Amino acid sequence: MDIGLYIHIPFCIQKCAYCDFASFPGMLQSADAYIEALSLELRAQAERFGACRAATVFVGGGTPTLLTGAQLGRLLDAARASFPFAPDAEITLEGNPGTLTRENLRAYRAAGVNRLSLGMQAAQDVLLERLGRIHRMPDVVAGVRMAREAGFDNLNLDLMYGLPGQTRADWAQTLRAALDLAPEHLSCYALIVEDGTRLALALREGRMPPVPGEEDERAMYDAAIQAARAAGLAQYELSNFARPGRACRHNLTYWECRPYLGVGLAAHSYMDGRRFGNTASIGAYMTCMRERRRAAQEDEAIGEDERMFERVMLGLRLTRGVDGARFQTDFGLTLSQRFGEPLARMVRAGLLEWDGPFLRLTRRGMDVQNAVLVELM
Image 1 (tube, helix red, strand yellow):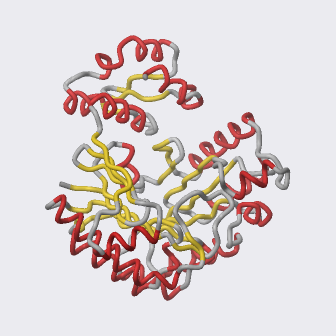
Image 2 (cartoon, one colour):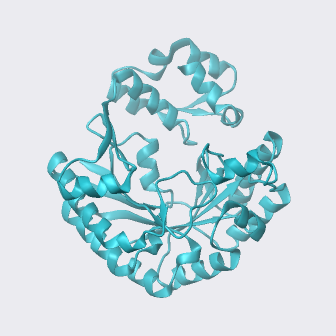
């Protein structure tokens, strides 16, 4: 069975103001011990699930580019030993532009990494500072140049819109700066202000300019679609754009509800019809691995109704939509039989449409996706 393999690296230099992920600054000295713990979990999961092949590998964080080339090489060797990589496996490494070096980039490429995803976020120093990012735009330019020199020909840039004090002109400048670097892939995400983050507190206390309103945010989203299209990147998911053949195969695993295994701190998995996730406590995780115990914080079977709804919920994020033929094969019902009149009503309202066997959101439906899903529930 082919799976997507996610490996979480929790180390960072500085916690970004908006981040609520499992990441910890000032703990890089624990990297070698953590990699050994990951190796133990990989072996244990291979024993649990048997013969699986990694069709995609995604090393995320945190800031995985804080690892040395030797450390990442050991980690990928351990992953290969437990879950052999497909010959054409997509192997992605997330990175912060402020942490890249020529030496490490060459070593990452030599270790097998063939896709690099860099968190550019914005082109303006003032916005990057508000987000708590450690890099500035010259770091992005230099990082892309070094990555190309190291042999990376599949590069993603992450951008964020709806930032505190961000204007439409700022966003247009960010898009131009990113696309001038000719990435193969572009991700454009709206900022979500999570409770408990430094950003949420600063906004609540008035120490930060307000985030743009709904109309401005919608205009920024439309600008991203138009700019990406003009640069030759087709939209294939609500927030993602790619050149032909460069869609992120690992993320498609999630959106198509195919099996994926997450290892490491706070990593989540969907395997054999079960959803489970690891503890978010680094101390508890390391102890569990040393004692050869599972670090699962949750583990639940997914019922048939929930699986069907998740297939639609995630599939509608793709511009091609939900594969109705696969849905019928897997569940023994057509989409129309399962979702009945609500689905027909959304089609009549011009929010959903059929394209052969695929059910997809219309452009108007993308703007009210949550309302469509509520109707289908």
